[in-house]
Image (cartoon, rainbow, N blue to C red):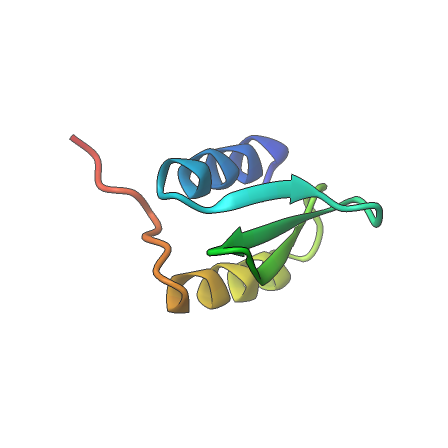
Length: 69
């Protein structure tokens, strides 16, 4: 995935009420109700790693891909 796609995911997370902050490690940290849900790499790398992170976020209520329309 590209940086643009990561930015779209972060934007969608924020629209859906998740808090997203940059950690000292260079990874995005995703919180819901002040609880850490998961992390996202700030740069594109292993495609499988990002897909696994999205799966964790979906279990916490994240809707991806967002509905178009």
